[in-house]
Amino acid sequence: MQTKSNNINDTFFQSAYKEIWRKLIPPGLSEAECSFVEDEASLQKGDNVLDLLCGYGRHALELGRRGYTVTAIDNLQEYVAEIETTAIAENLAVTAIAASAMQVPLSGSYKVALCMGNSFAFFGREDALSLLEKIAAHLTPDGIFIINTWMIAEIAIRHFREHEWYKIDEYKYLLEYKYHFNPGRIESEHTLLAPDGTVEVIRGVDYVFTLDELSFLFDQAGLRLRSVYSTPKKRPFRMGDNKAYIVVEKKN
Image 1 (cartoon, rainbow, N blue to C red):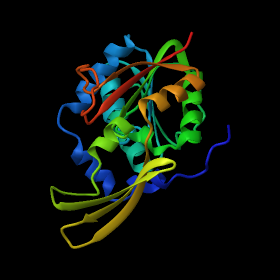
Image 2: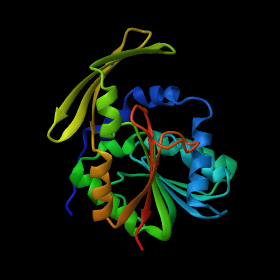
Image 3: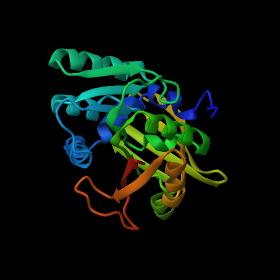
Image 4: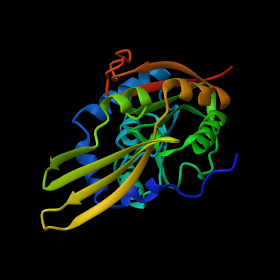
């Protein structure tokens, strides 16, 4: 299937948001999510892990510290350089690659593939299916794929707000959202006001699917929905929850 060559989110983290994102992660969350990954995938030391759109490596590095062999992929060179520096300093089996998840060539097989931090929402239907097919082709027969998101329709519609604002350390962070129905997506405008008065405006798009629509895409790609949780402690997902951990397995 032919894929699109660009995505509005490709340059999103090149802005000051690359540091804002780091500040938005609660202490202990990444470690809890890595424990969840270990348990769901029944990982054994040395198993291969694929971390797509890995950001600054919060999962890749932690899983490397726990003894797994990790391939971490992100299109932001600054994040990749940071991961490489840490992996070398700590002698971790973590390989970081600066590339688009859509275009990066994969080799070998992985016991688990990850797409965390709402990153799977960056892809519309056509690109999402292409990415799922690529992942399915490189999972071991008992491998799984884990998506962490807050942009499935069961969450996004219930919690949709047109305006939000936060103060994150020295930054003021203003958000404006517009919900569109065909294709289902939320277009966002993020205004970052730095303490020196500098203003940066960045735009993004999150594509919104129902769990049923995702299940159909999984099936087309040779995958199967296994379970959906709302927390890394495996609380079953329910309407009203604001986050989902979707576990997908490879079809036999």
